[in-house]
Length: 205
Image (tube, rainbow, N blue to C red; front, side, top):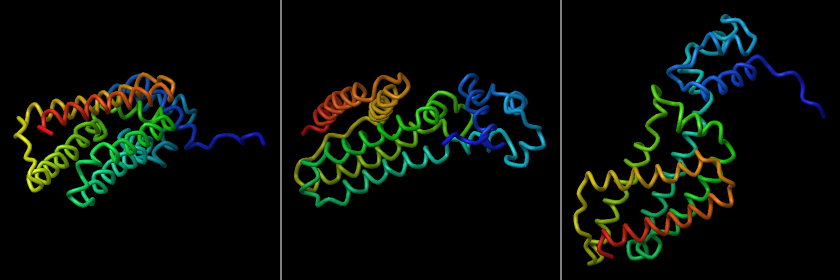
């Protein structure tokens, strides 16, 4: 069945995606978006109060899904009996990262907006928000190792931040480069093996 004509909202979203992807949030012009959508400014303001609100409508669901999935993986790991955590260190996070990669590929345009075009919005802090969650989880795991009689040396906070943000930036590079999903998945598994080994070394495990 042939698709019907696009709604005004769909036309606005299509024009906005193109404008934001081409220029980024800050440089994007609301006037250009309205013109490309073929609607009046009044029609636009019937849907959104601002350029910020429009950008949020395009990416909010994807941003929140990714963060919720990531937080859930941390909670699942923390809920394991303490003695089982070391042997499951890479399993739960591995499944999570693979699911996040598949999800991001399903919404490539939205994630490109978040990763490359969101400066000036709250969505520009994705890596920092994930790093904050990961840092807390790392410290909680160090406490578990202490209880298990396998204490981990203290990690310099600046080094820890660099390593954790570097890990997430490497993950998001897979999405930015839009390589075939199968290849990206292979790269992800290699990256995870690399980072897991590195963290085990730093933690003295």
